[in-house]
Length: 529
Image (spheres, one colour):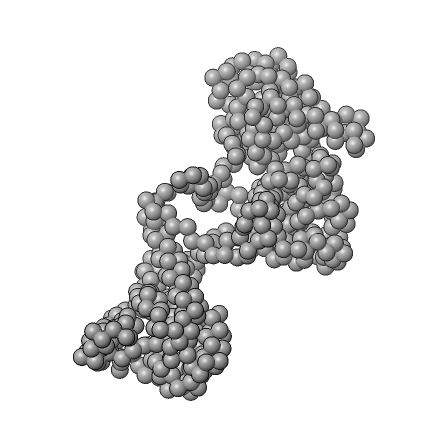
């Protein structure tokens, strides 16, 4: 069977968007409208003739509407194979009429959870009859059309208008695929709520991934790879995927990845003064806090002006004209900010390829959540790295304690190091990174690379000395040997912050004392791969 004439439609929706218009279009094609409760009332209020579901089933709605469509006269009308003589005989014997179209959207479970409703209200918003009808209609899509999304009403009406009230098999296949995805998403959200919110599980036996495609991308990390961006179908923290893109080309796979890294880091400073983060290939190449946003950008840029070219800039405050002009002076891929004033937008308007993303309030870096990574044969899942330290968490392990300024620089460097690929070494001075060493196979090389980059930055800026002189240095994990620490001392660092925990901690502490360094242990590691 290919084209099917729509003679009877069953409508039962929570979201009444476009319902009256759809009902009117169906009535225009002579379709009998069968409906339930509030949907029937909305259709009648629109002046349409409606048959109550209880009239179709010869059975009243009961138990506060919990039982109304779970009936053989509904599901028989949906599941019958129309050209099977045995099915046709059963329909005749039991007074079952065929239903050719089902329009259903489900109780607003996710919205009920999101508004903070109590457990009883959440349970009451678990739809039972709706998913059952959706699945029955979708399974029997050779004969029945199923519509679960008001956005598809227009396509359905166009198909009916073009064919004298009929639907094609191709349309019914597409709608069935979407319907099964809708019920799978719905059930996954319910399962997730039970596992995490209701039962308090950390890693449930079954972990549903509930994702909805947001955009198909031109290509992936490389041009020969395909890619798409997906958002969480259920409640989730706001991020790059929810940001408003004011201007610029469509985001690429690498833009999304780098912009996310930049937003994660700048969010660490959401309650701080003006701060700028510059990211390249998911690693920060410059971070600074200053008296103004433009000064913060200039200090972050100066840390590594070479890598900043073609980078991602993230800011923790509303973008203004002065800062926008400084950013626009070089090629920048993406700028992320909570907001931007009209003058700043006007500056960027002249750079048509620059993407400006306005993300609203910065996310909480301490928020809970899971991070997942696919590997061959499965997934690695862990709690996201939301660890932070306060002044009381630090343990001074050297003879000399850090000064107030050294301690401030230690904590700044530590915050940045958390977001640098391991092995990570970060030098910082006066609220700005001086040099960043990322992703090396040993910590000594990261320390040397960061120091070399600081020297290069000083030469380019015309400074008398690199900013590693008098700096604090952070290591994302413990120094397994004293060599990395001594390389930092040789670069001019005077204070060190690291997790500690090496079997050679005593040797490293002794080397720090001999070099006159102040060193604090955090007791927390921040590997990042």
